[in-house]
Image (cartoon, rainbow, N blue to C red):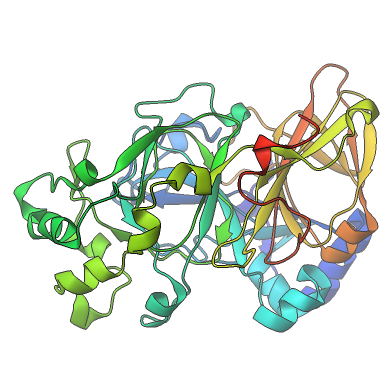
Length: 422
């Protein structure tokens, strides 16, 4: 069995190595699974990672509850291992981080516009998978994050049916604050941090999560994600601040509240309250302005496949990312063009992508290579990728996410209410 550690790490001659892989696959790069632990959470065991490997980084690091896709963003974990959070490209018997490959080939991978503006692949996606809820938290905006040398982070959620045969302990997510909540009430919760449960969830509202739907969440919006396994396209940053002191009896340390706050502000309760976008958090039409349901790209059912928008909409007037779910019926071959580069994960079935094998695994050992994850270059996406379902009985289902402003034809939030095809 070939493993990631059995491959030789390429440090020189990266360009010819990647160019050869692209030529062989028609503009695609095979990626190895990228596992990330979180010390303050309880793994949900739906990532298909072998149960014996849930604590492969060590008990002190916490359980593995996330798998990151096409990531060039380091995980912001204490005591992290080298390259933690970075995806590896697998090329023959060698490996190289996608971050290094993009750094060397730039526009040839991510496209000229994104490379010119960002000089990196500025987005990533993940599965996060927990047995229970995550603490109520927010992600700082760009202005706030820059104070600590980071990027702000908007994100979106989609709950794939394939990853959610069970809902685990709490399939509900708290979003925002109840209209009428005052800043003094939130400040009081921070004052009560060390008294046990600081009660901040009493100021929020929970929504039952529905597999096959999602949400769009901008920076500075408080949220406590529930226990569905979640596909999460987002900006390439790992900033956050936890505002809840106790979750399922587990302490959330103050350090996780101020992780991405200037040191001089670590005890400044007024500053921490002001990080919250008050208008967005107390929006009385929060669900109407953030809930997502799939919208078909076109009426292609008669051709044996359906492509659906699953993450879409703008944040502060900008499309920071978008995502689609492609379902190909058994025995069907189709060509699907896209406007830009993307990261893809196969969540059901088996087949081919420009001839590159796709196979959704049933169980994965830590460090084992798989055939379910791919990075597609912009040129290959624009030319049209050929997808083929080689099964006679099972659909081939893939999720793929895109960079900023790639899909101007993507729908707006709320479009699911009036789409013409479903």
